[in-house]
Image (cartoon, rainbow, N blue to C red):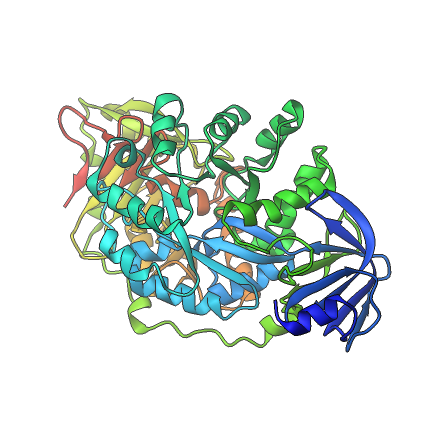
Length: 576
């Protein structure tokens, strides 16, 4: 603390900005009280009774709360550039976010990570990156880049890098993979936080995972799962995104059991840009928690100081002398609509509007390069009549799947009735020619195809459809525009949203991008995609081989529970 901040704290020197007539939301003691808040050099100098200031803001009884913290997110999943994404976060009071750029890392490696650091780092909020630890997520798919411990070590001291991103390779941790241990050791030796990713892991396997040094987990979908992880010493990040909505189940359990909340914080993981624009991210989590019966100040505690403490962000996340002046003004604690947001005591909304987006280098804008293909690779003729095949069963409102099966002789009839879909993943980074072909139920699309290059986590080209012709057309369209979303109906492309940066993000303004995404989603609904299934976000998770139970990659159908490919009389379907 410099001499001037002390002088302002003592009331001897004028503050840069003085908030008067406000009600301070104190997340340190979970109370609300009336006080003035004096800011100097971007820091809260004092909370109490002050008069001297260069600028006075009369809050007229409004609530002054600490800026909100999104404890775990993937900026790329919004499909907006970091600048546009951060602007939307700021709109709803988030002044700190911790992002894991493993989406772009799987496409472009260190070049992609550095772009995210540069673009997000210029925004008026605390923009932290946890380095992706699983690129690719598993060895059962082909990504655009492979990052080992040496690659991570080269980036660990880049400005804005906080800790290790979510460790999805649970078997690699608990069964002593040498390469995984090298990655853990880098961050353990530096005293950094290690993010976990342990869906449905419990008992002795959870114990081994946590004992390896993992600090957090955001994958709990029930209170029983979250409670076991809390008892194991993990910080539980309560997730409420667009495809995964787990907050209600966990917060209901917290309230029913009356447990201590110090190891709980809110996060979004993956959230659609339109959802962020309409309701925010962490502000929405706070609203939901309050509606379930949590006291507003306690809910705001989960949204601020708890996350700061979990990640070792000192003097961030509360309103107290010497703490960074990241603040949000609410008229009330019911609607929680921000009236103003401050970053280091400055108007964050005005500063964000002046930022010029970083222009990504050319290598990040031409990344969709599959081998040549024809409609034959999507043909249902690949399913032999005398074999039985595993089927991915989509679940409304969840990214988890179930598994069923069908006889090959029944595939064509089920496709014709709209009861079954062909699903394929084309390797799009190195032109290997790999194509995984499988079957899926529960999507709802009628007479057509949908495709996306947002396909977690290796982001190959995923296409689903009722017939080979439309599927081929959809895949060709995404090669033409170099990535994005597309929808085909009976031989015609009916809508495309280009994502020109790594096939993941659009440089278009948020309003334009949201309008395009909403339009193509409405078109997909009109073609029959079920309610509770996001036409493209839900589809993108069908390629993620670390979430139970059944997935598909460019190497074939994958059983996550057994952590091996599905075999059909000794063969899994992979065309190359």
